[in-house]
Image: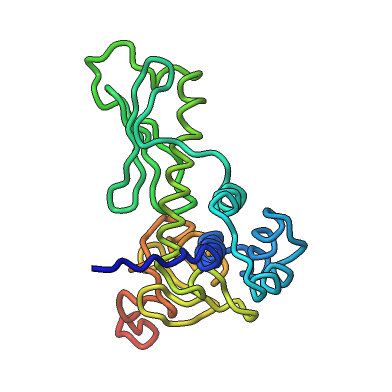
Length: 232
């Protein structure tokens, strides 16, 4: 059998990374992210990079690594590591982030508005590092970094218009693809703009309800009784 070797298309990788990062951020247009990607490897803008590519130029592996560092952020942490002498593990359950160790856990919900919760999971462990402010100060950035990665993965799976509203402020619901500039929570009756929905990954900014609970029209729990003509 004859094996045919083909060159890897690193330019395609570069385009994918830029597109993924634009969708994950929700705050930047694709052309803005492409410009930063091009500048990271020495081009003035994406058009200059594309023109060079038409003449046969391809980014290198080092170029791809450099662009990822710039666009995704240079800080990265392993899923298992140490803070001082205390081991930790990072994971996510149903898109909620957990950072765990012996007797402790840092929990961060899926929504960007979710605040980290410091939990004691085993009170028999007397010297619990989660009660040490210095330990918490080192652990929180790691947990927040993991939560950011999880949220970026969510955004990449959704339509671009779900994380980037149009000029009229309309955002597309990631599940039913309805577009609206106003959204209503069926739990707390809160009203949010399309921009707020996109920024908070379609969780209610007020009560944290999930995307399933966000409606484009107010949710009516029951018809109001007509008391004006009711008999005394």
